[in-house]
Image (cartoon, rainbow, N blue to C red; front, side, top):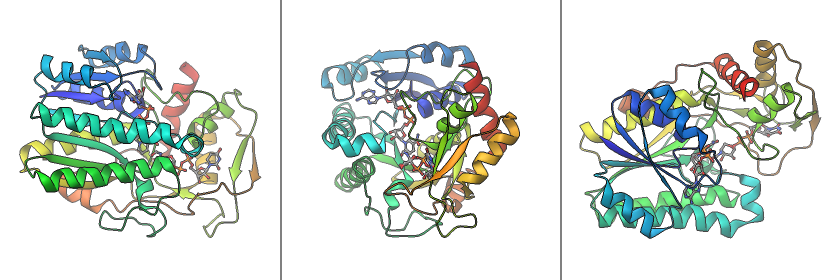
Length: 333
Ligand code: NAD
Ligand code: WQD
């Protein structure tokens, strides 16, 4: 198939492009490089040994979007493009609603116009918010989200439900990611956040590399086994594979509207993650315990049964492999 990958130069998109190419698909990447580097394209091509077609532009730009659909016979779209910083979204909510929500609407309008109706959308476990408790399953209520970034994901999910309700000829799969970490094992692709990282894994790896002096652990007084927050970390290569499984299911079954969690179903605390990283890297992670971060939930992990049963998706890689690949990426980049 010919797959349009928006945000294909980004962290999760780039790993997914490699797997799409490996599986024999053709890939068209559409990215404005607002949070990625253009050299990622040649790295994807180097790993896969195949070429991709690149369009540089913004998903809200109707003229480029329509040009892509005119010039390529697109069979399905995987929509990664979006902004993802929780803290930035609190400071600049309109930028997030504009980029993420308006971007998704622009994309769906162009898809509808060109009669391309297969869409996989990158959502987040954050949509479960505070209304339910771990393990989260896909039938649980969503929407009680406490930051604008998370609300963009929730709103887009609702928009996609409305699109499908109005026209069941669409095939829409929403994937709710838990906490993606890790990197490609050859260290050519990985997460490279601009400025000081918000997320724990790039923070830990930059402390290990002595780019940052000290990690602050946000709270050790939660009701968890060691007092620090528990998350479901999933290797980005496993996560990318989940997209292939979702694509296969979409094409071979009769499609429709589906939502799947992509996680491992296992939770690790912040201190356990630090220890796992120290073990594989041989580096001491300097950290101090600080106050809780507003909006953090104590325990987040997935119920993975639905993705396992319907998609045959099961994450393969454990926490040590996630840390090893992150460390190799950090050292080589
Ligand atoms: P990323 O920032 O590495 O990749 C996003 C890509 O989209 C970047 O290459 C960026 O340049 C591009 N982009 C952003 N806005 C664009 C626009 N308007 N037009 C064209 N390109 C644009 O992020 P990621 O970690 O790879 O995340 C991919 C998707 O998965 C995002 O939608 C994100 O919200 C979602 N997600 C990420 C996580 C996570 O922890 N990384 C968790 C859950 C969901
Ligand atoms: C993980 C744990 C922190 C940094 C976020 C988004 C979510 C999704 C994934 C996109 C928490 C602790 C962190 C630090 C710390 N993204 N921590 N010190 O918050 O689970 O999820 O990224 O969709 O929507 O909300 O991930 O990596 O920020 O934090 O102690 O410097 O690490 O408190 O317990 P989070 P994270």
